[in-house]
Length: 319
Image 1 (tube, rainbow, N blue to C red):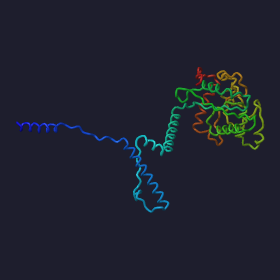
Image 2: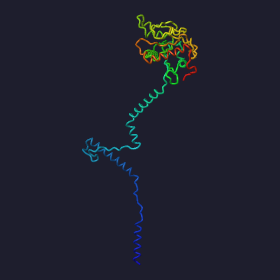
Image 3: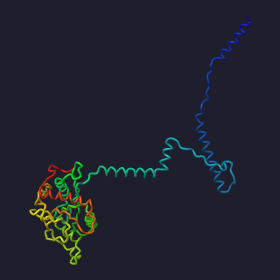
Image 4: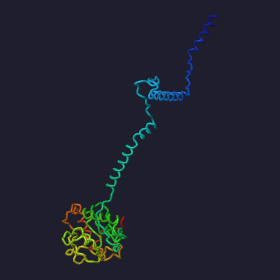
């Protein structure tokens, strides 16, 4: 009997050993990271102090600073890496973004920009012409006489206003306007001129090359109603084509004798304001290129529509 009891006791002990025992995990020290950071800071401070001593010649070598060992840099991660990238490449990135935005803007402008069917030069030589206050109405009226030349579904006339009134003396503004006028003469972007009769004098100043032409004649005051002959055929002569039209010097269609002033709501349009079509000019100007010739063809159609009273877009109210 005693032997059986001893066997049971031994078995019981063995049975307890067979049961799974819980694994005891080592608890993390919450201060371990802090201690490591502090130790690293202290190490860096010691190295800086030793490096300073080496530079000052106080010591010849240091155990704190390992020889021939490159410095260790911690590679930034996560948001720190993003901040580091923008810090080092912010100017390059900004320039790239600006360039892309500029190219995108130019492409969009080129694709979506409304192209003018016709370019018209409106020139005011005196305050009595009243052209400045009527530019918007003039544009709408011209668009009523203008076909859709490029077939894009809408009509648009580009009106370029130039103020050549020098009654207030010469200043930066008038000088800029005269330069603008000179550029138009030589480029030929606009072939249709809506202006007063003093345009003849201005054209003579540019084109007259005779011996009788002097600088004093160029600066001589000419009234808006005075008859001034055109020395060179800069504008097309319509005397034979429109014998019943009221033409100044055979080329300037007097606007208040047509229905144009009704379309422009311009009952007070003076007798001196007319419409002129630029002719192909023999002088050395760039206004005779293919684009200029196409603009001249279109301008001739609009000119004819105004003379004959042919409204292509009678209900047009502008944009």
